[in-house]
Length: 222
Image (cartoon, rainbow, N blue to C red; front, side, top):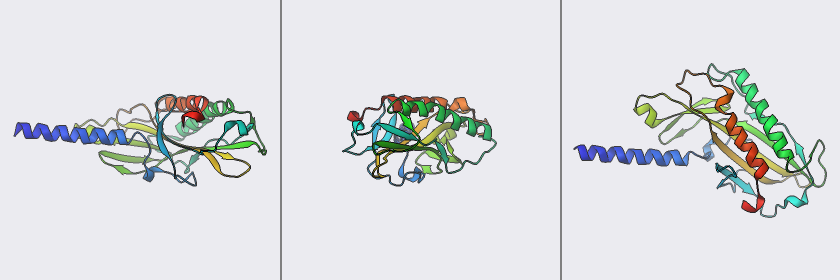
């Protein structure tokens, strides 16, 4: 009986581990709708070693463009402050994302206000979803999703994982068609429990990694 019990525990642990691995990237039912088309996205590894969903137009050549139109990052959908994630934190995260991502995008090409025939248009958003995954129960706090892992609930620990979801794209200004699409799920620092307020420091390193990856992205390593 003891051996059978241990086997069941080991099997359950294995399934939960697989579920954890699968949750490293956003699932289709977690897409926000910010991007018009999610087809073609494939899992890859970013320059900082983070799992990312990305699509790059096979004909995309950075040398065909000489500028980027910067559209400030927004929240999509509109966030709803809560006792755990207050308006101050939401505003701070958005400002931090723009302050980090704008120079990162600008390091690729000069930023301009008006698109030209050789311009790319950047648009991006911090998004939030509510979903149920195997072994995971999502708590919706738009636009940041907090999750409690099944293993933590089973052991009586209420530590909460934090994640920041981001969707972005580069659009060819001449054709109006995207040439690069990215959907990213970044893992932040844990909260002690569901009553612990979230601070900016829980998620700023996720944005730091995104900015670094935007700077280091190599189209040859799609």
